[in-house]
Image (cartoon, rainbow, N blue to C red; front, top):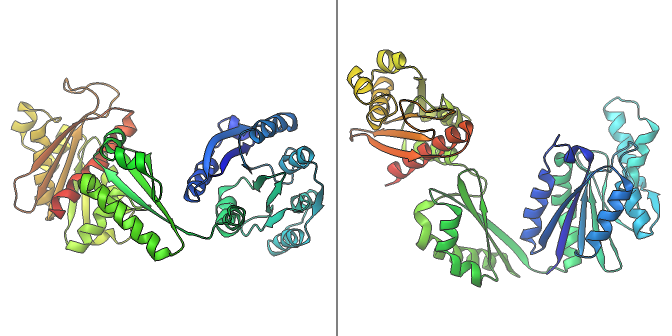
Length: 413
């Protein structure tokens, strides 16, 4: 197993002007290769501090990856500093320079002299072409340690890693196995509960490996298998997924980079069902999420933001008795909202959201009180009540996720 450290170079990272998404991306990719990332480090555009960071990384990692600091300006000093630390020369790469010159010519811009700096690379390094920018990446090995340099912009780094960086690492690791991965997405179960349910699998994992990851109110498991035969690696993934599903399959809703709203639209469309929403605390967020999915027009007929009492009563049709007797934040109101929107829009499914997103109590109910009503065909409306925590936007977002989850479970059963 190889241990790695990822070093982000750039004062803008320390100032909070941009998030270090490169480290997150690379950690995921390295995990797929079985490389352990033990440290993320961020350092500003300062040569001395970068030297100190490199010296520390050399004591605890076999692979050191740098992101950023490869541009044309004076504060872009990553490769110059690394060259000094490693005692290697810098040289101009002809192919990189030609690519940079072609970029300026195609864009009808004048190339300033300092842009030639981007074609300078560490002597003896494997040059990683930049298909979406100018500064190339690099990979080299010195005294048994591997160093990789990538440009900072994610739109350049991601494809560079996929097309060239991963191959460099595979050669260094002498990988002769096929590495196959699969992401399982769960909702309605917390990270700690999920890990408890599969604790023995996590403790005994070797190949395939199981990596839990918490997200925005949901949990994912990344399964990774290695085998000389890709089909056999997939069979290994099938086997471990089957074992996991036997324990927590009721919470599994999709794979890879999907989402609850994407899966809901897919299932609604597959079954030829239509849906409409009546939204109070979510303010149209449910319908907004669904309509971002291509082809959602077949399933989503519309929505009504019924924020005020008058709209709930006079437009949506929630009874005055319900509002006076139980209040807008109630199971009864959620049920009526779902049923009325179903009738009003003539859909198979109506869903109603009401509750308290914050920042203060409403009708005596604490922040995070949520009621979701679902009316399905001619069945009596079902109401799901929650007590959520977090920010106003977080409560609204998680409420929408729960709404998608409840409808999915209902129409799949």
